[in-house]
Image (cartoon, rainbow, N blue to C red; front, side):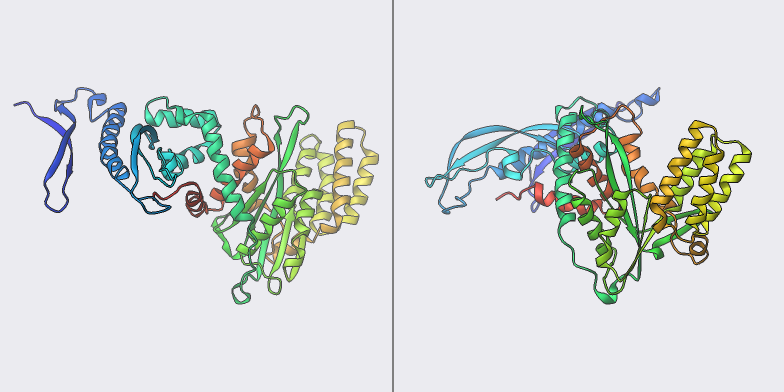
Length: 447
């Protein structure tokens, strides 16, 4: 006996169970598979089955869309004036439907495409996949991956479409995040907040500019730090924001203020500690927050101090390293003056030109930031923030992973800024809410 399996779609009356239309989607003999490839359905066969099922459903949904309606302006009966073929792009498949055009004597006419009716011809699930893939990979790679899922080259998944969808969604998220946010209620406000501000340089596609800097900030409550194991902690809840715009820091300052308020900042309650790498633009962003908290503390990030020492130590002998360690010891105890004096002595002793240049740069760095150097040992013993190590992944996650590690990749400021809005949303774990708000702006409800 030869047996088979058949997939049947039925259009039926849900009350009586009467079948109006029945269609066989696929019919196959069942044979013993001799290879794993014969076990179940191939990828292309699965996509083909989905295509058939989707077309069957769209056939009847389109009839409802095309049903006679009254004019939305004057409520009079409308007349049919022909049909139009319209594209609809689902997550894995593409379709064409027929939309009835209708017109009223008052001049009103109905939308005659899927895009006209719903605001887009792309299903929200497809747009979300394009956006998420596009901010995690290059646009070209995202296009290839999406096409691989569909087992076909779909023009709707081209890299330009992905870029445009990212731009559209990013602008909605940014607009929502820039809306002035009220301070937390006093009885619910955070007693302490930490803000880590840093930047990363991206290669520019502007012929007149080699690179530009994107600014990143992460705000969190100290009590939201969870210990994973010895030497490893994790921030359970945080708000990260980013900007690559050249607008005199207007956008990043508003974004970080809103981030602080979202995390519970209140001008009569909150002690805000800002950690930065010591760049003047970072301090400018940090200092803009001073009026919005009860106590404002600025700390030159110990992580970035040690990074500069490591660069020098990698090129120095053991004797010089020991001398340099004394400078670091002074800084660890908050004694910037003695550290600078010792660095002056080391510069006079140094004959290696490259090391001498590095020492001068270290001296200038400490001298420029000495007002922000604290007693790091005391802060460590008091369990107070003194290093951005725990939040340093912000720059790596938001910039380096997608935009910097590929050295061939070049960016416009706007393009980088758009990608950063979505990556910051995902890094802050607010993507589901942000995407829902974006859908409400992009898509329409049918009349």
